[in-house]
Image (cartoon, rainbow, N blue to C red):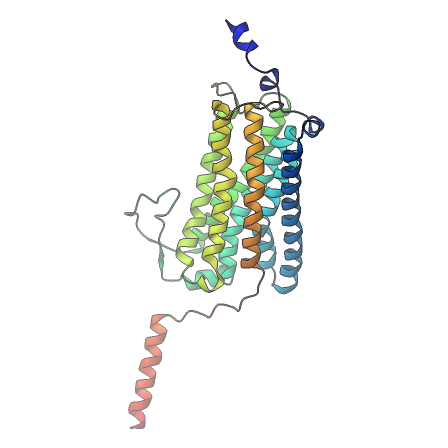
Length: 328
């Protein structure tokens, strides 16, 4: 029975991803044009990003410019790594690791950017001095509106930074460990056994991701009202879009490939074809996001006006009233 079943399956559907030269040899005119167009998109994304880095470096002060360069590079880096993964299917594990490690750093840099846009840590704490912040936000506590508001202190801001920084560090470490295990044949996404390493590492990375996104969301929800003149809402939306496309979309496609929903197409197995489709979609999506981010970040802004507290306004009003009464 098993021999009859295996006889109906193309041998390439049971093999590992093909070599790059095998992919090139079996290309028809349509696939060649598709690969050429996607490669051009990724190259244009990278060139635009490098040009924008020069502009940001010349026109923005330190340390804001380094933070913006990191955040702005998420889409071009993912597009470039996806292009490598498209041409070299057997390198997908390494290209995905590079993209995920870079984006893990971007999550922390987005938190730093929100603080820097308000003038740095000291200015940020001064603006929120005597105020409470809302912590009932996604992805952890969006369903808990009853959570009390907490005062923004230097200690709380420190733990918010740690919450985002731990993902950048641990994600990189676990990605390197996964690649090392993969080269030894011990890490396989299709191995869902309890003894497999993927079934333990990937859920843990998911928990780290959710834990890191919560501090960034807390800072954004409480500071976006002060940063609307800097287009912080569309900037944050682009960051969220890169997150959804690079993490959630890729995971869904991998699950469909493992389930067999994405059919095998020699020389690509079902899993390799799902990875190929994910890389191709990612290049097109990151190219569009690169263009949008270019219009959002390639400009200079004036400094935010200092916030005038209500007690200061009342004190000035009382002083003016006293002066008018004295003149009379």
